[in-house]
Amino acid sequence: MRKIKTYLVLLIGVSLMAATACNKDEDMDDNNNNNDTTPKTCYITTMDYGDNYDEVEYNSSNKVILQTNYDSTGTPSGYSSVFTYSSNLLVKMESIENGQTENKLEMVYTADDKIDTVHLYANTTGTLEKLGYFKYVYSGEKVASVSMYFEYMGTMLEVSKNEFTYTGDNVSLMTTYSMDMSTMSLSLESTTEYTYDDKKNPMIGIGLDNLMGEAMFMSKNNILTETVRDADGIVQNDASLNYSYTYSENDYPEVSTATTFDNSETEVTTYSYDCE
Image (cartoon, rainbow, N blue to C red; front, side, top):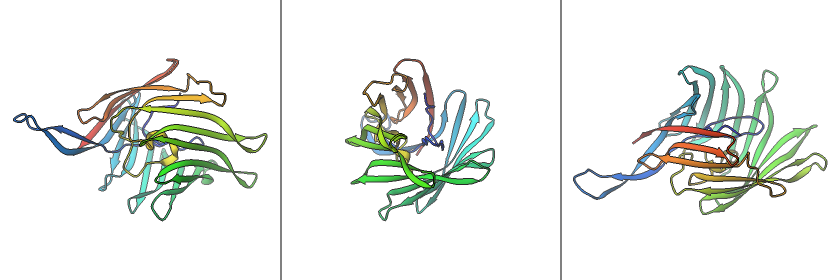
């Protein structure tokens, strides 16, 4: 089961997790019974996974700029992620290990500030080398698909592709294709269906939206179920997840528990926020 974390992991199967802000009405002074309709904005400051935790820092525009990992004793693990912006658009993400950049993403945008291409670099020989890139296709304002390209024998090949179906503001279905080496073309690998709560997703809104085609960074609400089926339509119980949450007074997830359908693994993440 993949580690349920809220930040960057730059590998061949890239996944990104981040933190951001949401709004929620809070009660007014006890002297009256009305509700304060002024929205309150909160930002995740720590994400505790039990045996280690991440601290998150932001710039003056409330864009996340640094994630630092610590072990359970509070000692830096040597792992961090650095985020660079230009005109409030994320243009570079670096994964640092013991002071050395191991992986890097560089973003190219369309004229209307949508991610067009993400170039992937990795330290495979002691220096960063470009491995390939991700290409985005849109339907209106929503991401319709994200394709991954890697070089093979001097040629850039489309090695995987995720297509997205939406229900309202949430991704309800992701269809994944991967390269069949016998035909050198894409074939269906799996489908993933999602259901959601009606709360605010704290992974949306600070410039990291839509990166890498992860549903939790493309949906307004928090995932409740993630049902993975193989190409034959058979549910993969060891890869599918049930999520449960406890929420803060501002309706942000405070504790997230993810359990595989077969109950073989459970992961718990506790979030701390700074609200203003």
